[in-house]
Length: 222
Image (tube, rainbow, N blue to C red; front, side, top):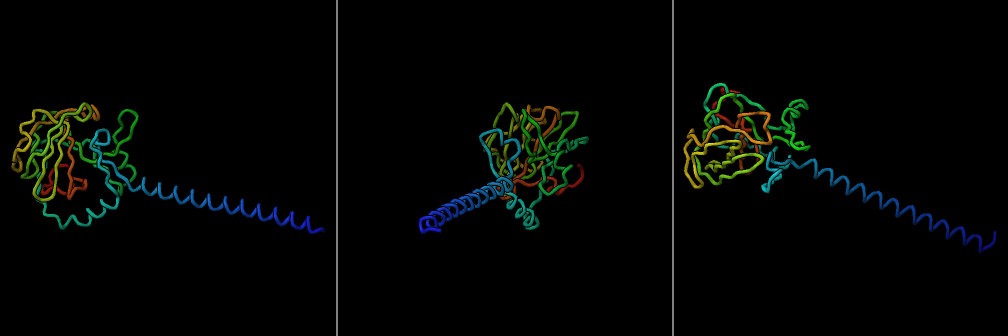
């Protein structure tokens, strides 16, 4: 074999090695980016109906776990947002740790979009009064074509309660309210029209959404 032939095959081998190395590096980088993106998506939990409005608040699975572990440390003494009899849970809070069947029951389907329910929907055939769960201050009252009327109340125990799908609101922004005070009545909205007359209730503990059913002191009911 001549020196020219040897040099040719050597050069060809080097080129092939470089191409193989570039392909390997590209594959490794692609897989790394894909894994990071998947982890970010898996770690994201969107807040209930607000995914359809301007008030999107991402909540991570890690944050939810922290909240649950600190639940016993929270100074909570809240009551249910209703006192009427015959009120039942129409759609539960979406718990990412629950069984698959429970998670499916806590999914809202609206205009070809699946949305995790980050609150509890309380339903009744009869219109019922909606009560403040604890002493607090009304921080906002808003109207929306999709979720209806929303009232948000800030409490001294690092909690914020959110009442949606209501009507006949009896409070104003900046009003001070007492535990059990009637603030509105149940109503309807477009996103959960199949539930009919109901209250959609959400609860924030230390700025993290939680399952209200785990925080009520009066456990009677649903």
